[in-house]
Image (cartoon, rainbow, N blue to C red; front, side, top):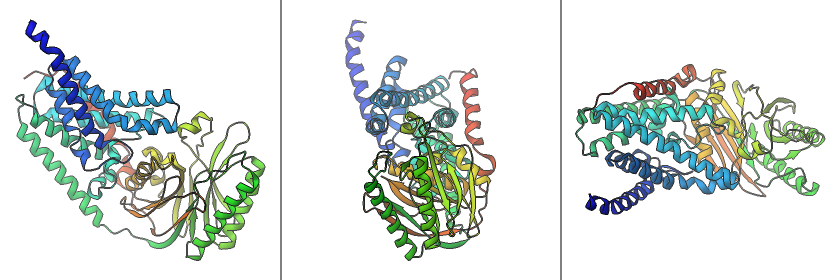
Length: 480
C-alpha cells in the first residue's frame, strides 16, 4: 500500500502530461480554421486515454485537461466578441461538453466491452450537437461537422442528414480506432472495423456521385462589394459620405463588368430613421441608374431598439424587400437589437431568391425554411469579427446551401466575399478590405432547385441519435 501511495503523484503527473499531449493533438480539429483531415484522427488519443485510465476521477481529470487545451484555441476569439468573464465561461462550457461526451462514451464502452459500443461516441456527439443547435443562442457554432466543409466527398452527407450525418461518420472513425487500440478484450473488434469501413466507403461513394451531378439553370454575373470601415450613429457627415460614395463607385464598376446583381455587406451604416429614409432613396437611385438588382445591409436605431435590415432594390429602383435579421450576434444581443420573424423570397431572373443576414445562416432550421420555399439563391450580407472567424462563418453559411440545394452569395465586412454552389463548392472567394474596399465578380448558375432529403425531413437523423443515446444510457447493460 505504501508503495502504491508513493507512486500515485508520479502516476497523476504522467497522466496529466499525456492529457496535455492528447489535447494538443485534439486542438488540430478545433479552432476557427481547423484541419479537416486531422479531425478524423485527432480525437483518438483523448478517447484512448479516457478508456485506458482505470480510476474514474483520474480519467475525468485527464479528459478535462485535454478538452481545455483543445478548446483554448477559441479563447482569443471569445475575448474579441464578448467581455472577459463570459468569454471564460464560454470556454469552460465548451470544454464541459467535450468532457460530458467523452465521459459518457467511456462509461458505455467500459461497462459492456462489446463492439456495438463504438456507436456511443458518435451518438452522444450528434445528440449534444442537436440539442445545442436548438437550445443555445449561438446554436452549434464551432461544430466538428463544419471542419469538413472543404472536403467535397464528405460534406455531401449534409444533403441527406444535415451536419448531424456528417458529424456521426466523422466521430465513428476515431471511436473505432480508439476501441482497436484499447488493450482490454472487446467482443467483435473486427466487426466494428469492418462496419466502420463500409460506412466510410458508402459516404465517399455517395459524395463522389453527387459531385458529378450537373447543376441545371442559367448563368448570370453577380457582384459583391465591401468596405470594412464602419459608419456609426456618431460618424462625421463627411466620413460617412466618403464611404457611401465609394460604394457607389464599386457598384458602378461591377455594373460595367456585367453584374446583374450586386450585394453589399451587413450594417454598412447605423442610421437614425430620417437618415435611413435618405439612404434608401439614394440606393434606389443607384440601382435604377445601373439597372441592376441591389441588396444593401443597413441598421436603423430609433432610440428604442435597433434593427438590422437587408434592403433589396429592383432594376427600376423600387425597394421590393425589407428583411430584418432574425438571430443576433453577441454584441447585438448586448445592445438589445430587435430580431425579425418574417422571411423574404423574391423572383429574380426566373429564380426564387431568399434574403438572410449573417448569423441567421448559422442555423440549419433557418436555412431549411428557404429550401422549403424553393429558393435557388440566398443573398447574405454579413459582418465578421476582424477576419478571425472569416473561414468558419463562410463555411457554416455554405453548409446551409449544401443542405438545401441552393447557391449562397455572401458579402462580408472584415471577412470574406464568397459565392458557393449547391454542392458546397466555392465558386469565388476574396478578402474584404478597408477603404477603398474590395469587389468580387462571379458567374453563378441560377435556376429551380431539386429539394434535398434534408429539406424534406429536416434533422430527423439528429433527433434519432438523441433518442438512441437516451436509450443507451438508461437501459441496463451487462458487463463482459
